[in-house]
Image 1 (cartoon, one colour):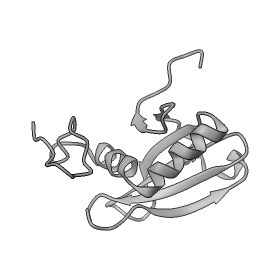
Image 2: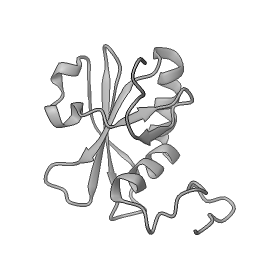
Image 3: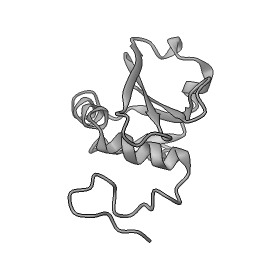
Image 4: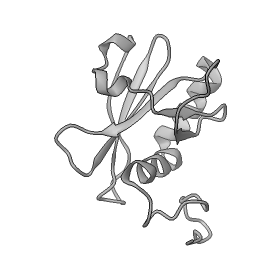
Length: 124
């Protein structure tokens, strides 16, 4: 396993060369300003729902959706260009505004705001 150099924003536990595009996108998202914004919003609004999926029409882009009861945000992560910052795709007020693919809740947001792939245990 590769270990990140000091000062690198890559998580130490993830070999980004061997990771799936979704895993790479989540790692980059968590290290980004968008990830820090989700952390702050989570402290204020509570834990949201989240999904990670392919962005329509862009094979190297991954869409990250984070939604609370009355607001949602979407960001894009270009996994083909490690220098391109995470970018906002949109935001809104009601989960019903999201397309069905973005409501496939396949990721969780921890209490500290960090996103990870997987489903929330039953009974949350």
